[in-house]
Image (cartoon, rainbow over all chains, first blue to last red; front, side, top):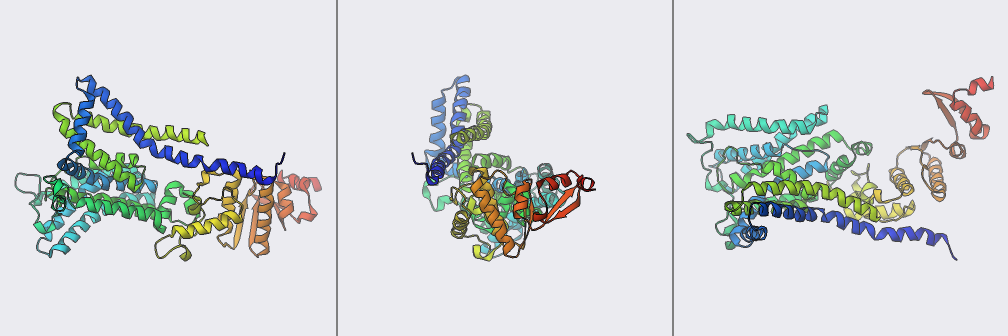
Length: 363
Length: 157
């Protein structure tokens, strides 16, 4: 019997090589498992109101992904969710829960409209660039407030971001009034030079759908967030703060500064989301245009595991669910889709923990 | 974070790790491979996470990270707790090498044998104050233990 030191230590190393890969795969599957179970529970609801679940789901799938127009609608609905999901995910990575994405998105759209109106006489590329930048800047400013309050005074960002949503809504109502068309709650139409072109101009298959170039900005933003998080010194410090702030501080990270920067960046991404509606779709700002896209961003980030690729996938899923929900509106109540969203979120959180425990046991 | 990322904490602004604001994953990995094998961390896989390592290997990982930073002084608190015998000998040799390289090492440990084996000077704290100082050759575990209870002076008198 040969028990050389070599074999003794080699054994655990060899055993360790397999499971982490399998465990990682299991963890990555959590969102898919959650979605599958949610659809099953949704099917029970549909059956309970006397409709055929399979027919309803088939209709949703066909209408949201089966036609060029449907795909365009899904992409359009997914676009703001990519932005808001990325905004929430970036905050989470730094250990910050930005619930203020709704307000940052709202202010971003408002700033884009004001800038678009003010710059209507400027050369087109410059006017469009500055209008988009205004959306990001407004969101950044609104995100920086709770960020600085957290960094300076330790004020909890959850409370402050929730509160600032209300302040943003009131502020926009107040500041917007002089710019609104008579007897409406919307601004005048923006000049064509600050419109973002629709994707149907490039892809005729999407004809009639409001999907627009904002989607390209959204995907570019996702790539930029990925590069920031995983390829830069700032992203490294941001993740270090999120994982273990005291350890990061020991490693020379200025924790407060990183938190403030993360919140400002998160707000900037959220604000950028406003261009989808204002520059790409309606070409004016309207009170309440966000319609909860900011809050849904929290779900998108959770399902997307705070990874840019996951966020894009989750946004597409919620976009399809959202448009599919409109399609089946006549046969099942629209609350069904809202309930489905809620169940997906609940299960995504719990499925992650359950699969995590299984993954641990595998080791 | 991966072991490669974990190993650069505190060095994230070092020029050699990437151009401008960027960190180069290949450089992080190369650095990690060197340190993991030098400090005998098993498995020596830069893509692993620290949570996947055993306690002793986590200790060696931290030693690798902190001793590779080029600090002028090292504060080692219970550096060998939970570490197997072979690794203890290795860590002891590394700490002595730090001393020999002219760096100050402050070792805090509940293992008196470790303190006696490694130290040039031993200080005993009791209720927040230094109550005793000795050369390892001139003291033993029993004497140190008495001082740790605050009764060392009374015993001698």
